[in-house]
Image (cartoon, rainbow, N blue to C red; front, side, top):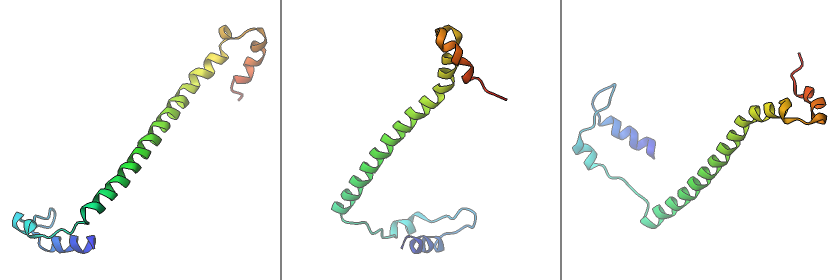
Length: 98
């Protein structure tokens, strides 16, 4: 339906690179909308989905912050100042082997 409407509108346009549709032709178009209760139902569903997406985005941003903090955390754990005697023996296991 949308494709057909788009084709109809473009058939009324002038210009090839940037189609130009005169205002009077646009004003004459009839746009069919669902009844108001249906529009409200759709809006409610979309609002719920947006809230879920924003919550997921926040969680992903927190995970990214934690991932970005990992190198510094590993360096602190490998630092001799932060290790007691027992940990110094295990510090070598954090070094890269080539």
